Image (cartoon, rainbow, N blue to C red; front, side, top):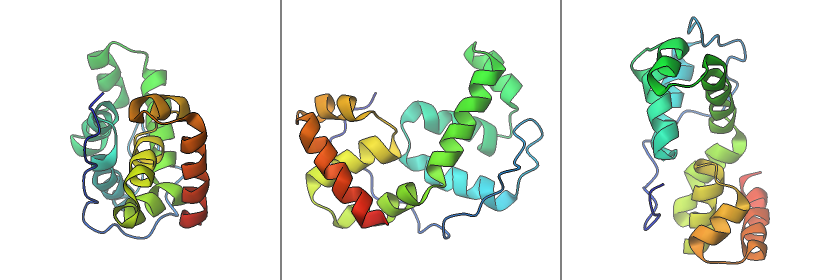
Length: 148
């Protein structure tokens, strides 16, 4: 994992969140092009491994099978990970943090970046930032209120 010294600035403004095609078939990539563009734009905010996965499938047009073969993992794991990343990246919470975090205090911005954008657990975020788990939970409660 990369050390979080200073979170990257938000990318170019993104179209409004959702609805996105729940019927997107990762095997045939028959979902809308708009969905793929959103995925690629928002992938810049993900952890490096997740960003590479999104880029391989939605940017380079590789199949889940070829990515699984390349990574040496089961195809089902790749598809499940892509689905969970898609759900997270298209959520209101992700979009709210993506748009609002630059105006937030440093600690809140770092917690939001790690937990919401990069998908870290609360406990891992606490250890990484050197703050208590209670402080992380408090910041997340505030973040939840801000992105509603």
